[in-house]
Length: 166
Image 1 (cartoon, rainbow, N blue to C red):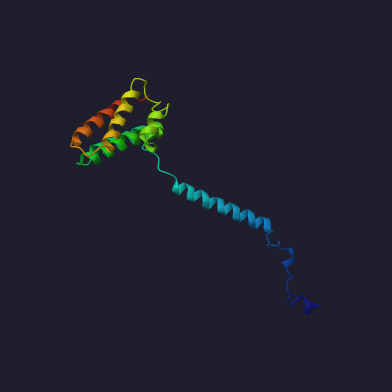
Image 2: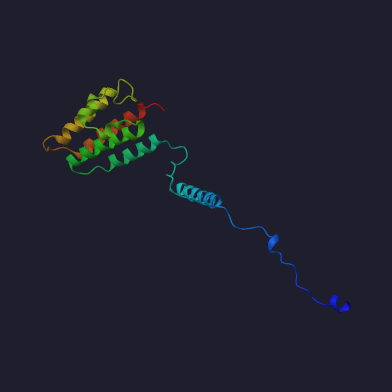
């Protein structure tokens, strides 16, 4: 009997006491959905548009872009008229959501709510100036000066910008 006490015996197997690590299919699906959601969130955060600098509104940014475009008008009179008209219409579209950038002059004039964000007394002046630019764009080539167009377009832009509600 004493010999039996000194003998080393094998330990009992512990496998029956360990939990089973097999995950059900729905658990794998949940893990995959969570990982896909996290990946989508990371992509959305990386791709989101950059915000405007603090304190600068979309209208102010549109105004700066329009001023820059008007200051850089080409020397050719016809090209200057095209660019001035485009810059003013882009400003109206960006600052007030007016679709004038995407309309012909005839559609713009026919639309009753055109320039609805501007004061009533300024609307006809802006409409007539855009009509004048449209006439110059599609008229026969003529002599004119690019600085003259730049000055008049800049004055109109200033007037529109000052008149817009804050």
